Image (tube, rainbow, N blue to C red; front, side, top):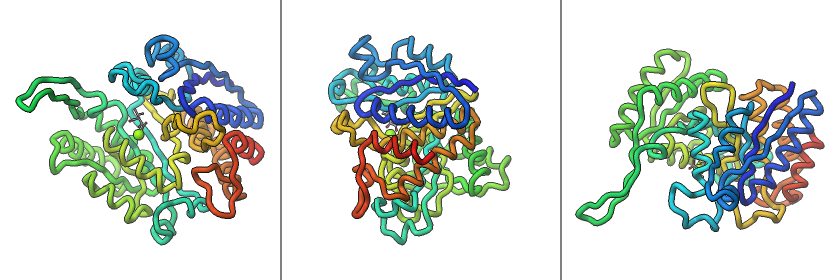
Length: 356
Ligand code: IPM
Ligand code: MG
């Protein structure tokens, strides 16, 4: 098969981790007889420098016309003082919105080989950690009305947290469907003791749950969830939550895996078109030094094969190769521990290919 992939490598370490991802995908393509055709487009800071805007229309058009989108990372200190709608992050948010990618899957899995790199006490992660954060991605305060106004306390700014029934319904369904293929347990995270938007959210989740009597459902307030996550990480299966809570909890969950450099993500909508990116940012401080961890991006490539192209065996081949490399003791700096062999970004990519 032939697949058309739009590549938004972005800024900072984005291009270098993406290069390794593409090398791995090409090697898998060769092994299984697929061709991947890449179209490179600009998004983020590099697009601001070239076109004066973070998300040129051409980038949106190419992404829409592709079978899937790979994204590296966007942002950097050069663009930090630009107004909100001109910042590199707009590229990410704009693509999520324009492509209708409302479901963000962030699987936090702790590899046995990385137990030392996990900051939690060994007994807390002895049973392993395997959590799927299902984050709503095109609603909530990220996409609600925002603005400034005068108040008697001076100038004020606001970002409206709003969720509609249909938005909650579809993300809840995504979570329950995923749970069915895993350990059949969904934890809904909201703040319904305070927020009206959370009260609607929870009532819709309860309604959708009626269609999934085989899946266990429980609920946590977001503050409590952040605490439970580090107290009993092994007891979570699927977490479903809104955009802002999901942003925060997925960074917390990333630490269960040893490093945010290990966490891939998939952003999906109604069709098979998806966007695949590491959860980490552009890390401008280490960009160009060949020390970044490419595994989150490589695992995002595996998620693309699985969720957009239905190539399950090929995806597993990449995941297994990553596990083998880690079992053999190779580590990038972020997951380095005593007695292991430290390698750079390029070498890590090569090792994954050798172990496919
Ligand atoms: C993420 C990031 C983005 C978000 C930023 C860069 C806009 O933190 O993907 O988690 O908040 O969604
Ligand atoms: Mg985030």
